[in-house]
Image (cartoon, helix red, strand yellow):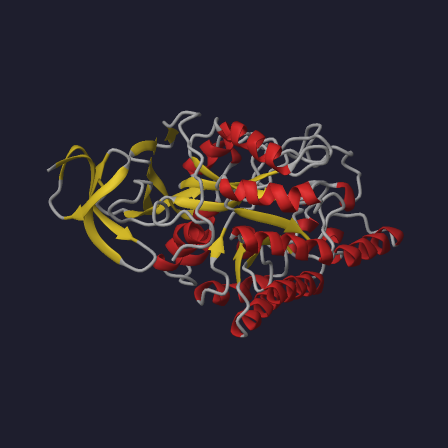
Length: 464
């Protein structure tokens, strides 16, 4: 049999195995894995790792905010950045701003997504718990294939009370949807911000000291307790430090249905970056904030043992400049007025590979599990996505583990005007990327056009 494309002699890496073989692709899917395969187009992958295309399960792309602004990276630019970094699927967020019901906003977001170069699934943010949202909206978007719900325990425009969170958990359980949670204590953070400002602490580093680990730990414990009460499945987003991971491990030990993710910036940057001169520290403001070097060092064991099962970018790019950027209130604005978030779609896989695999903190199979297989399972996309197997979509990244690249923002096609990893030297970079059986990136050039991505209707609940 002659296949459309054969990836020959690559070292195939899945979440469980490392072996050398050929991959035969017919149309958009993997047809056969074997030896001596023939194809109309043959790609020699000798010396390269062949892994499932990355799945970034936490991306804010072209997302509308309550103040009327829209995240700067649109689907065309963000999906280009993703491809250049080896990611072939994203799971992003539909808003729930005042004045429009949740179904309308879900539909509007799907229309925005039609301009994506890569396949995408959608989380739905929930910011209010009126009857229309709980009784009609959530069941309807579940029917339409939403990947899950997201709630916040902080931020003025987003946070839910415990009672509201319980109503969302009940509705999610009835519809078979995972609830992902941003865990920080809203009232305590407001108290800390007021105290910092009263003391004249306005610098970027005050963002970290006003949101200490104990406030993330407390909110995580509370979220898991409420999920335990309802007996429903939740995911803790962007775990920043070991003491939060330890709470999650304890909850899992007593049977709570909880999973967790972290992000490359918590594994490679520290709160010292917030102390950079002038307005530079603003680039590193995100929530939860960056933690200490000791916290960073302590996170890796939780990735190896699966307590933290996913590494996502939490791509939430605000440029430094511009009317919606971090300097929107001026370069002398206090830390509480600076938008939270950093770009990371293009850098996620390379930074994790360099910081984790090259330093032997995680193995190759761990890398694939964290960046592709586990998010596919978590969001109901597996085995179509997240693995290399007959019948799976031919989303593949051919990875040169020896290539050294110094990260600069101009490597990507992002609309964001900076990367927090500017100047960082990494070893390991995509040599080629395929998306649904077609070469999407070659020689550093994006070949896949906007509108070629598809909405992925997720199956309810995690898939094994």
